Length: 411
Image (tube, rainbow, N blue to C red; front, top):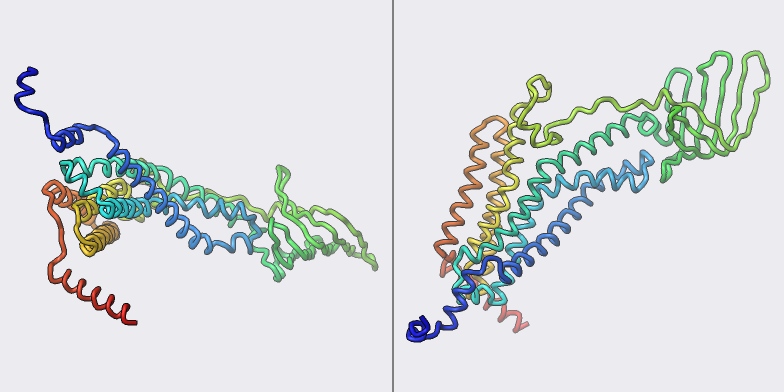
């Protein structure tokens, strides 16, 4: 055996490294690429989600100002919509992370080194698939449970807030008649739920009239009911048959408002607030299901397709950017085409989702688009097809770059 091996001669260094890299199940290359992609994905996901969340949260700023809610209540209320944002942003963040990693590896000539080492295309795309599996599992969990749960809590919280008449009917600067003979006015709402400049005129009892003026107060809810706790004010009581009113100054006085603080009724969940398993077994006697059957069908297919979009997006990105490039213009062309392909696929998916409300064939078209994108990308990757821009187009861009450089140098 040793003689046969020595007669055959030593294995070349390139063949040895090629064989070692091909047999390696989960080596340093996979870990390095996967770590780079997931780190970029986390940064992009947090950044995009934060920006969009802030823009959406600013629309509900009146919850903290007009209704006197605290900043913690405001942040908690608005953050419940974050999982629904992650459901849409995560696949796009992944493709941006993959494109960034591929461009970085191309700029540092690492893709050229991998090809020179003899790594086949399926071996190079494997770490990206590992990262995609992680993101797909995250998207599946958010789609099936976390996003509907957040929307459910958001709806319950909103129902509890809007069901309280003290938080919605009492508007600053207005005389509000809660019922016949009872009028309340507040000057302003302050942070923390404090009411300033409170006036209460109670004529519900025909035998007496009570007028209350207080500097500030708060709404207190306990097992006994709901009370408007007034502080630093005075109470005037006008009784029938008496000429002079009774005047009482108080530092703290509780006015019963239990009958006006109605409890939230039953919450009816819509299409997006249903869990994934509920969409599979819809009750036929549900009035919402009977009224909107097409929307439930479209929502079910959207949930099922959500974990598949990351695979299609990464496959498209690698198909355009996975091959080694020799010029910067070629890399820029590939990045642009990859992003356009991903954008076109997602917009087509949104269009099919809208049409799926009326036709089940549109839902089938969504699956064909996603699996078709994966199949075409896999063919390009395994065949090592390099998508290059037309030569005339590259000459045009080179001419523009040369003219721009000359004008810049001249000025």
